[in-house]
Image (tube, rainbow, N blue to C red; front, side):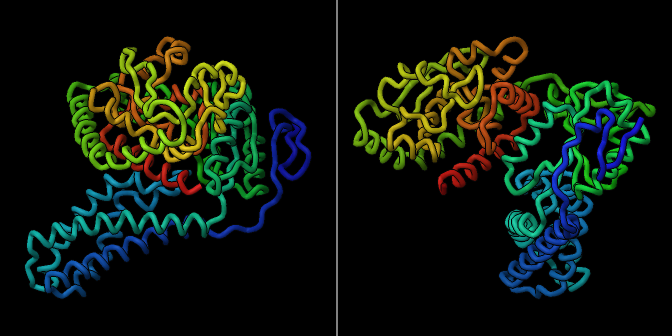
Length: 476
């Protein structure tokens, strides 16, 4: 069988379907820039934190600051915070916040222990607390700036997708939404039955040639089917090329992010808990909703009054728009929003259904002709959702959760996919903060993973991302 070469004509399946991009010039060392940026930011944050806190308490900052610079790098290295960016395609400081909080506490404790040894001076408890909180905040800001710099200093990450054509197109679409982070420069479409061919020695040579020719930074493996042994061999082959690798885990689609690795006498297992929230987790989530919901309602009350006046001045009709939605366990409720469309907009929906941009089963139009002038501004900033805080206080909704669907859209979701209704629907959710519109299939999958892997931090993280998402869209 003649496989050819990456630079010549490839005639044998599956390699005759290889898609190639133009040649690329030599790139700077991405890993060096990423690691150095984060390390410099961490050292600067530790040094400045200790100098400021020690000076504020009238102590000598020089020796602790020097020791702290070494200690913070060691702690971050042990926690894997310099290696994680190499593994991730889209690293985020938000995902590190729980780890940074713990490391800041260990750092403050380490300073309290080492300072008397180095200087003979005792460290007060309030000073330890000040170091902890100050460093925690500084590390978040410093790492955000470091990643902002690294993203602009590094070239776009060039990806080769190995997998079936449908998955390749989905990956290409999603990476396009990441804008400057990554692009698909080549694809090797294969199916499960062709795995035996690609894991052969000839196939290994073709993949290595493609990596060299296209200057690939990362290989993404995504297969819908295939024998476990051959898939494992493919992943080993990809890792042997020397570039970063990512695998689209089909198994985890039905699991979520809450699982644990286990090993029993050499047998590798993945422990998966039962689906859904425990009674204590439900209580924790509800308590968070009530506390944060009341605070948010108090803060936004003046803004809501101004919005109500603007709606009345802009167009005829009520200030609020209510609609029957499907909530937790299939119970229906009346969701409240600021009216952003002309009165009687629902009567015009059937005439516009052909313009929907999210595919069968859902209805969404970017430039909806029914939206008013004020409504357009409210939607762009998501301020039309503020009255749903009342739904949250009434227990019909949550701050974060699966988006509540209208009755006809919910009726199209059948079987185990309805498990997304296990949680109360949210004002925002895991797919509302994405940089692209999602299909019904994607929505169901994302909502399921959120429900299957819920933690309180996941809600806080989505809320923070929602704020960033709104601010970003509001500047457009």
